[in-house]
Length: 480
Image: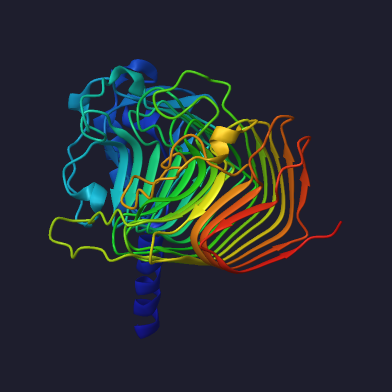
């Protein structure tokens, strides 16, 4: 009798387990209409909710166009956009939820609107060979309305085990995707074309830990791949590799918001070039910078490695900035102190530019950016700086918005302008200049302990290698 009872209990357990196991569902089964005109928000949300409640799985979108407003992703659920499937964002702002997240950060202090949203979920994702089209060009910018009158494409907050893979994303009303305080995030093999409105970033990683971004193609009006820290949580253990980036603003960027800082970041084997789209909402046709490393709102930036980047025509190849904008992440947060920027390695860079806003590495007076290494750098700068350009007085602009042109469009160096920096090494730098260039290759201003080793300058006018001001312990070791 006891044996029979155990068998019955076991059978019920197995039956219950079977019924609760992960199960894939198709939105068509729930009544979705794939005509690009019928609003499917309620149906898609019902499919997500049921899939999550029964153990998770894929919510599948077969070929067709699915119009929707805000949808909330739930634990265990992956949206799977099949080849030929397009998730279309509604052009009616009333179809988007106004969401106030629980997580406190600079960009969650007020209600905003998203096409796809999740907070506090786990084991979620968006995969497949389909398309997410936000149709964001219809939303007219009115002041600082990002995320309010112009929805973001994707915002995932405080989520764990996230996979974004394969899909094509385009036409967001503002940022294409924002991952805030997420852990174990993989973004692989996606394509982004975001040129329909202001604030059209490609990928924003904000205070996330354990992140891999690989094999992506990003073409954006604003920042391409951007790491941020808009709360006290650092952006940590992040690797970006094998990506192609086109941006009217900054292609590869750490900043602008930096409250929690950046630790253990590696960016490698990427290609940067201008977008084929030349009209801009923001930035410039060729882009403001290829590589930007910024620390301006307190916090610590430590152990950042950037290696094997090929840059074809950009406004500024390399921009490194320790500043003191000191923006608070919340009204009641303590005022940020001056942050730290240290242990940065930038190696194996090949770049061409026609901009007089040359590469610049700067701290602020009294506070140095420190321990910076640049090795195996090949820059062709065809901007032809003049005698007047060489005499340019560079403003301090301590609290300014961090961008490569924050000191003006013209800098007095043809290769690198360096100010308020300690312990910097340039090793094996090759600079080719335009035929009328007169600016020195390196300008060092208030630099303490610098080494320029094995530098080679190719210039028709035989420009100076180095100009220095208020700098000490400068060692130059160059062969013939």
